[in-house]
Amino acid sequence: MGRRVVALATADEAFQVIAAIDHQQHPLLGQDSGGLAGCDPNQVPLSATWPEECDAAIDFSLPIAVGSAVASCLQSKTPLVIATTGLSDETQAAIEEAVKQIPIVWAPSMSLAVNLTMKLAEQAAAALKNVPGGVDIEIIERHHRYKVDAPSGTALKFGELIAGQMDGETKHVHGREGETGQRSRHEIGYHAVRVGDNTGEHTIVYGMLGETLELRVASSNRDCYASGALAAARWIQGRPPGLYSMFDVLGLS
Image 1 (tube, rainbow, N blue to C red):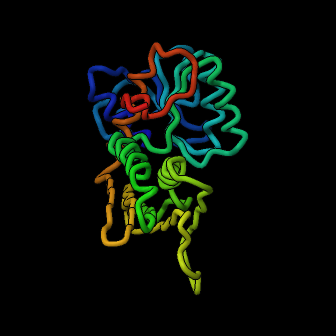
Image 2: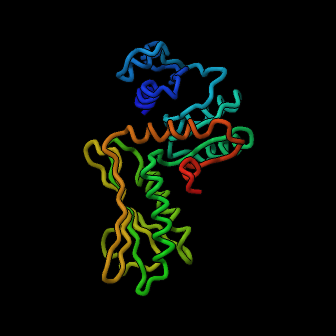
Image 3: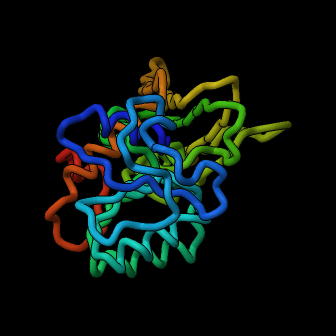
C-alpha cells in the first residue's frame, strides 16, 4: 500500500512526496521510493527518519507501527491519515489524546466507494428495521489468503454502523456451525472468506420475508485505497484538531 500511495502521489501534480518512511531494519532503506513503487525516480529515499515539516502524512503500516507515526506527527504538528486497522487499545488511546492537538482522519477503509456504501448501509438499516416480519442482516467479506485478521475491520465497521440504526441490543455472530437454532431477530452475522489475491469485497444482505436487498462493493486492485488516502490527505490540511472519518472527507457526515 505504501508503494501505491507513492506511485499515485508521484503521478499527481497536486502532491509532492517528500518522505517515505519504514522501520529502521528495512533492507531497502536508502533506495529511491519512486523506483521501489515502480515509477520514475523521485529523489526521495526510503528512510526511517520522519521529516521535520510536511503538509500531511499517511500511515499505511501495521498496528505495531501506528503509535510511532502518531507520536512523530504529534511532535511536528502534522495532520495524519491513518489507514491501518486492528489497533490495540493503547494505540487507540494515543490517537484519542493526539486529536486534541492535531487533526487525524482514521477509517477502517480508505476506499471512497466502501465509505459511500457504508452510508447506504446505514440508511437501509434505518428504513428496514421495523419492517413487518423483521429483517435479517448478514455481512460477507472476501479478502486475499494472506490477510491475518477476520472479519475485516471494514466488515466490523459495517456492522457497527448498522447496529447503531437498529432498535434494541444487537448480537454480533461470527459464522455458524452445528445446530444453532432459529436465527434471532436482533443479530448481525459475519462471514469471512479468504481466497487467492482478492483485494477486498463486502456484501451486506438484508433478508426479509418475500424479498432480499444486497449492497455489494468490491475493489479490483489496491489503488482505490491509495487514492482514498490521498483524498483524505488533501482534505485534512488546514482542519482544526479533531478526529475525522471518511464520511467527513466525502461530505456525508
